[in-house]
Length: 140
Length: 407
Image (cartoon, rainbow over all chains, first blue to last red; front, side, top):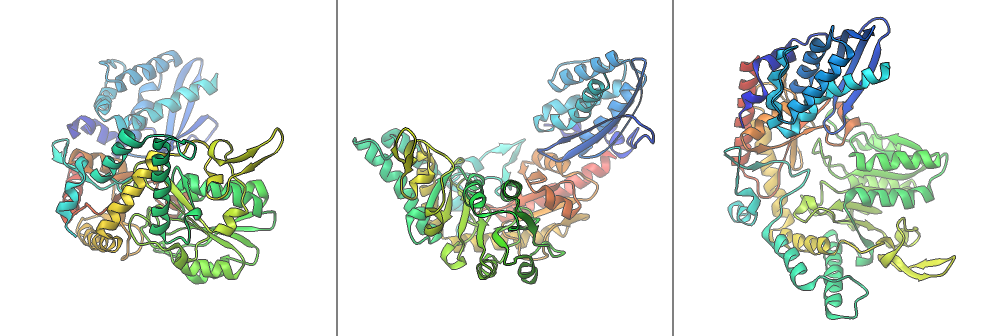
């Protein structure tokens, strides 16, 4: 069990300097999710237009894994089509299952691959992606 | 108390986790089990297993004797007047739900009050929320002092002549504070209310005397006191229990069944529908014998020394915030390491073999009161040592260094 598998520099960087943190002033699809077993919370806002995720922001509180995953996710899906974003979400689930998955479209996500060795923390990493799926679903 | 000898009785403690000796500090969630309890359950299944109260055969008698013998041990352990006042349940949660669903719903109506505190475990909060919603009664909270303790003047002000039920933890599973339940019981009774005590964090750690407290109901779990999971008990005063309706029907609680009307067995069986948790009760009996062979007062002293040692050593860790009173924590210390989320703390500690809890501890209203989304908690039991505390402190210092370096 190597802690560095879990806490790579890129993860700590997103945790300390989260991207897209905040809220839109105007209307956007908003999804609030929490992880009741540990108290992590995320509020994700999505702006989509013509089948493309134009912008995403989040607020919330939680551990380094949940918050850095949210930061990376919002970066990863911005400018992608909804199909591409859902495909990334599905590849991210596979990554959490320990499968070798590539993210040519946003390589930093691969930093989270170590989470699969920490089963108790997988829920932290997937919280933001679950919010994304729910947001896209509600937008339909 | 010889901790080395006690530790020998707990096989699970003698293993490595991630290359380090296990330091188990999550006892407030569940305790480990000694050989005496493991052997008692094994013996029961190997020699005595049968259903209770119905077999005319020898095994039926043995199982019944073992089960009812365990009830008598619990009654003596809590100093109940009689074993009829002990209802076996799955644990504290089912015990408190039983009181709420049966006594609470039958005795509360609009205009009545149920009084609890913001430090209650969800198990002693949500059942009362539900009773209030169902009956129209008002749920009221005794405010907490700045350090998380309860002031008797606030108790006096919150409980009124309209209060029907006061429900309170004996010891908080987050703050470690001991609530003055005996004094609160006296106030409740003077104003015509009954008192329900959540003993999940007290019974394993101190001598509890339900008659001395004058508790009307007292709930606890076996698994936090060396017994298996799935067994616990509700103590209730006989006069109250006799006037309550069961909430589970069928099996052993039945006296006589007609097509349209049925009657229930007498106490305590009328509250024990279905085949009970017989091996669990046997395990609980063995756990009581084990704890009594060491002595509850000796256990309480050992833990008190350990917690004080932990409070002192934890104060050496830079940036560590301890929740609850400055002194007098029973069995546990809850804390946060600044800038490091408690889940991250728990993961790093686990990598050093140290098991602690991180999260909201089933106390979300208390977390909001503490202005923390989550906390870490180290909780102790009779087999923990100063070396365990040292391992915790050293792992916390490494956590701080790790997160300092990683940023």
